[in-house]
Image (cartoon, rainbow, N blue to C red; front, side, top):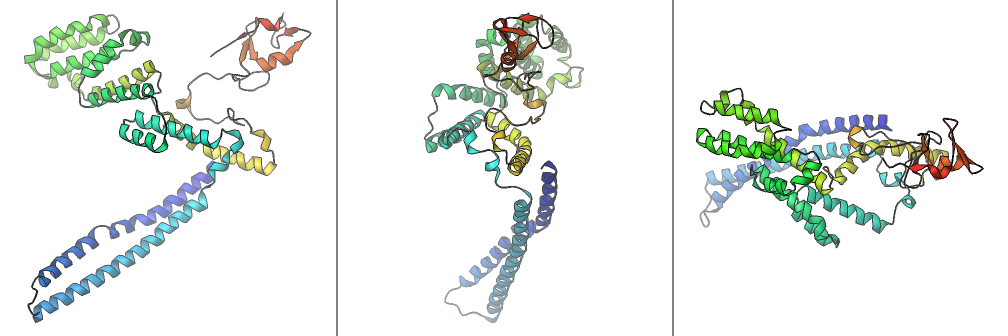
Length: 392
């Protein structure tokens, strides 16, 4: 399926490339041409009650001819581009399967109402996370989706602080970092230090007149001296070149605008981690994963229908085969039982035996003989009840 998808993309791009040359021809030139003609006609018709002279009659004839030629040219161009666009649509229908909803049986998932509610909630969360608060509120009203204020509050606060950072206002972010200092330290976060450093750099960029204020502000670095000693030394060393100008000094990198983009990324990552939110929108991650997995799933569907083995895929929490989504989509450890060669789950968790070997609970139950369990990897016999569940 993946090879067919690649060929389909090539065919589609070929048809689209044929459309592109026609697009400029239906741009603004016909409108400008007709407007100029209408202006000339209006200037002639403004002379109401005045007989048309031979010159004005000629002008009117030329205008009518110009309008007719322009409309005919526009109709011809529209006909050409309509033909090309229709070929693009046919290429999509020919090379891509439109029935992607049938990849998974409806019996695998929850009810349609439940699916719709989950999807709407995912879209609302995505909109909140992207800062589109008014759009999210409108969707909640139209879909009659009740979103608790406690759910919205973290997104509102994060977007307020990020908007301030985009305007190079460090105040709200510093207040937030100081109020959450202890929890940020538990996460080994350097957010507060980076915010203080950026404020110090802004003072340096203001020139020698801010030197005393910068020295006074440097006291904020004291709690971070052990972990960020080298960076603090660099900032203190830059004071030597303050009167000569940091732009032409060895410390010119401190003035790089990339620090603002970095602080936005750091704040988003650490704040989301602290508040229990995902850095990336679950909807965008699901969409990207679906684009990778869909060709494989459609191929599985074709094989299942061909071999008439629909019972192979009947669980919503497990796919019939493993689909590689890349390292970006690795969020937690995965353990596959070495005995049954099945991925463990909440209903079939990994169990650590006394000898240290790990198998799944289903494998453990199958290996019990006479109330005793013999490890499949070593000769140790043990009581099955002594096995401990492992949580990765």
